[in-house]
Length: 469
Image 1 (cartoon, one colour):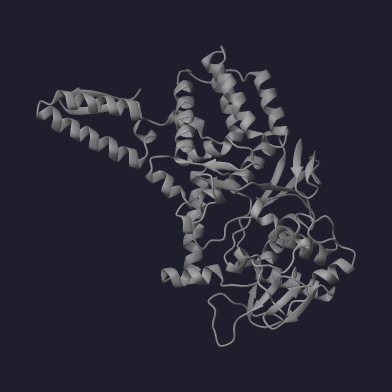
Image 2 (cartoon, rainbow, N blue to C red; image 1 turned 45 degrees about the vertical axis):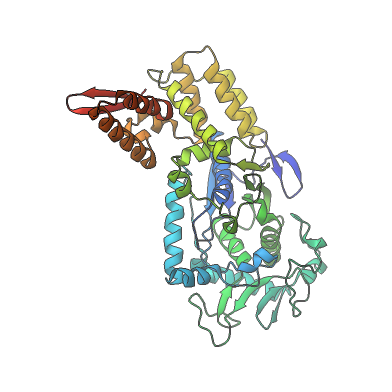
């Protein structure tokens, strides 16, 4: 299997370190609802996991929950400054930071089910691993890779480089200069230095703070991933996955503090980064009103599986543009797939040539769009409906579109809550029209239901019933 390794900036053959593959994905910071941009990154981790399992690999999969220490300064290029996102959300919503973390973590876990993500073997929280983070910082301090200034303990990049290590392999951080988007901190020895432990502000009681050898405070954002990944996967493991936004600072910092603490290189053998999701041709953001969530797409009558299908149409290393029209196209394609698969009486034999082609596309740096195309080649072929079904169900072990579950649903379950309300209102309007002998209006509503939802109406003495064609 060939994957594009961000560490060396090219494709290379995937050779696991051990029999059980160690895999880590950077999870959510639970201060708000997860956006469809975030979900694209988590889908990448899920597709990789499913592919490895499809090829009969054993995988130990870990995803973290960031419930402290992620400061707003990362938007300015320095995650060591700014306000803690959990504390900020606490003020915004009038809840404790702990309640905020619990609420949005629960929402994320529910979203994982809706998006059909395989549950990781471990979902550790940053707040449950303060000791492990302190241990790493102490190791760095003993090796001369950390120093103290007024607001915390910082990683010393120049000392690290003098020891023979390299900084910024994943990005161009070594070329950074003082600039408009990077806040200046005159106490830092080097612009690239970052906080390992932040001191709580004087005369201010934080909701989330802990005792440490250096005083009361909280860990820097980056150190949590080093602590949790190494605790559950070891000092060296195979795969690290995340969005391309983490490639600039978070992941390079994670590498140096991990390798600096243990002396083991490389910390992670293969790094995979997913490209940004664009919205209407531009960047997504709350200030632009386009940071859509699962709830937002459901309000528009789409399902999480429609969104998942949309993600599959773009290669993970290429930006993909979200529009409501594109999501509609994904929904129509998925609906058409299910409709055609219903023609089969049951699965029969998996078609070997298509399966081999499907496997080759997966082995080529997870080329899911091409894998999707092969699935449609099967659907358009002259093979029996039963063999098509068996083959597509096999492919769906990777694609994760819940095809088997969709085929087992009854008609009412296939309609979203939003669509059900529309259907019920239209049927009621039709009943009124019929009662007023406005049969032209009644026929127009019947045609609308058939065109929009594929619904056939049946009038009887007990009222009107319906089914999906």
